[in-house]
Length: 205
Image 1 (spheres, rainbow, N blue to C red):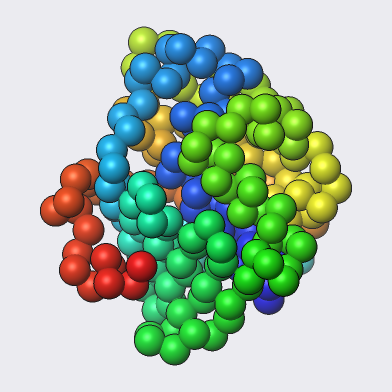
Image 2: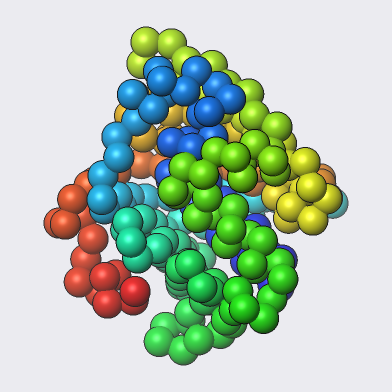
C-alpha cells in the first residue's frame, strides 16, 4: 500500500511541475520558456492504470492542485473519493477528514528519498535530478516531450520510466513500472491563480 501511494505521489508532482527542472538535459531554454509557472495551478486528471495480468484497466479521475510553498493535492473523485497531500515533511492519505495513512520523512527512508526528489523537481535542483535520472527530450515551436529513466534501484522499483509531453502546461504523462504495470494520466481544464483553488482544497493544506 505504501509503495502504491508513493508511486502515485511522484506521478502527480512529476506531471505538474517537474519539467521546469528535468528539462536541463533536454532543450532547457526552449522548454522552460514555453512552460507557464503559476503560483497556483489546478485542473482535472483522468488516470488509467493497466496492471500486469489484468485485461481491464483501472480508471479514475479527479482534481489536482499545486501551490508553491505549500505542496500538492491529488484528489481522486471517481470511483472512490480519497485525497493525497504531499508536503516537504510527509505524504498523507486522507479519506474524508480521516487520516488513512501518514508517511513521515523523518521515519521512512523511502519517503526521505522521494520527497528529496519531489522538492528537487519543484525547486529546480538539477544536480540532484541528473544524479537520479537519465533524461532525454525534444521541443518544437509549441510542444515538447521529455523522458525520465530512474538510475537508482529503489527509485526504479517505485516509478520505472516516465514520459511527459505538453505545451504551456503538461498534457500527458506515462509511467512504465518495473513490474510491468503501465499508468497514463491526461490533464485538462487547467486553471491558475488564487481563484483556481477552492476554499475546501486550500483548507486541506
